[in-house]
Length: 96
View 1 (cartoon, one colour):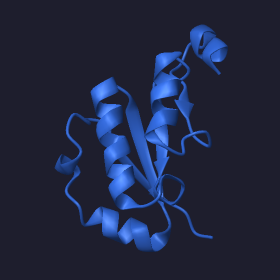
View 2 (cartoon, rainbow, N blue to C red):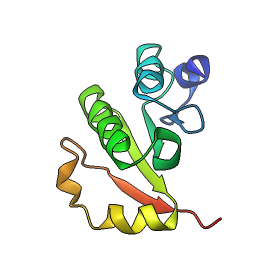
View 3 (spheres, one colour):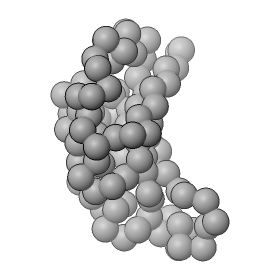
View 4 (tube, one colour):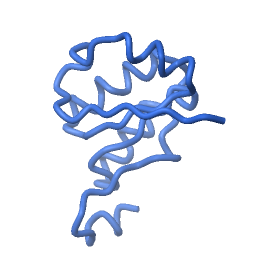
């Protein structure tokens, strides 16, 4: 993925490979992604997703947040200002 990112003319975002803050850090360290899709179900809930979003902000990575409908409703009740440093915070939902 890092090789693709080096040669791509558009920013590359990680998706299925993000299960923890360590995964986010690894993608950043090897310049494999400029951002990522944070999935509440893969990261272990809203608190861990929030921590992952903070890490992405610290690393200068863009994020897209995703969750199941129940988590989506809870996430939408949170102010986007709770994720400092993110000008490009996007939410999406999925219906099983």
